[in-house]
Length: 292
Length: 238
Image 1 (cartoon, each protein chain N blue to C red):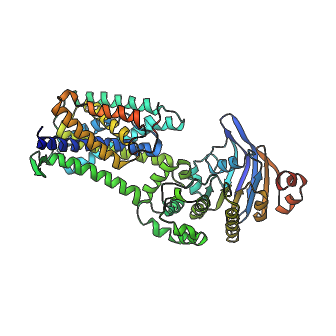
Image 2: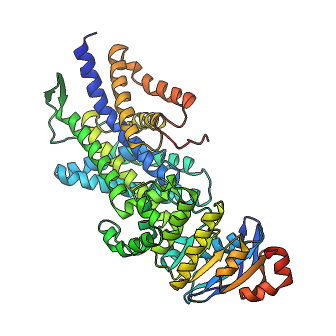
């Protein structure tokens, strides 16, 4: 085993792992306010990526396409909240699980019908030429993933800590009833969390697509890993998902290099099963994941 | 001014309130006393919108508010400091207070300067909260959390304040402190509906009082009148 190859594989895997972390962070945002997550989050990533691709093909420059794609993601998040989550939560039922899966299937079929079943390249002005950092080669594309993921997570965390609306978001997470008594609308806060969750899903799609291509099947590939990351890290630590996401990405990349590409999924699933067996609240988690 | 009339509410099929009626006049401190399970807390919850009444009227400052979301009723000027205090544990003491004034502050930046006068007032009432401003509210003692819950409700500059069981689970010396605070708020002219287990202390501070039994008002009157009522004395003041 050549250490420089190990390093190389680990670093590019870890950078990809940040995409899983970002999708898992989207789970955390909605779990915080409503104890619900969107099981169709992968489809949000995929549909937003396709939409952004269409914007690009229409001739929009990258710096206009990105906000357009993020806005579209926010709208999709709001659709999921309104159509899949709100009624179930009002009736204190777990129906959001099934409804969010169904909405995901709907988005999947819609994407196949609108954009076709084939994987398509996603053009980007960011160069794929490698640059040499600390003895390993990373591409600007891979670095753009890291910068994008950490920037949006940083911005959202800053919003939660520094603005009154963000503090209201935290208040709803801490005690929904008490937040209502302060004049904070819990319903609107849940909407906000779903919109933000849609934004991070869209950004994940925009960042990962130039590397992996866009296609309807990208949803299921990403969601499983994001879910592993969320379960292993727990549903309330943003720092945790970044760390676990990078670790999972590195492990995956090493497994597929040394054991063959068929083993690529093994680390994620192994970690998922281990976490559920040993520490269902996640390594960094306080919230108990209810078994349903 | 708060008027409650023929209020019915409950949990699922069981009706807890069966026609509660009471009035809190501006600047008055009104006590609501009664045995456990009489419906005192349920009355508070139905008034503030935490629980949707199935029938009846709640009028806040001339406006019908029954059936509205709790957040709407709060923004219309009702501050409910709930049973069990319900402070935001992970948030700092100061953030808890600022959120008390949520309805009238800018939502993004510059919110603290808009609330500075109210913060100073609450810190004046409860100097200990100022010492612990940056601390997570969940780490405070029970008494401090109660002060924070009252302070948070005051931050809203409410037209009417509901205070549910402020003495619950507190040491006697802290309970005295809580009642001293209530007396001070009364001098400042706050309009307050107070639910209390300690009927005697509640009657000492109140201008008017209602006694609840099985979901409705059984007896009402000034503290002096209730103090002469044989039934009230036997059941609650003995």
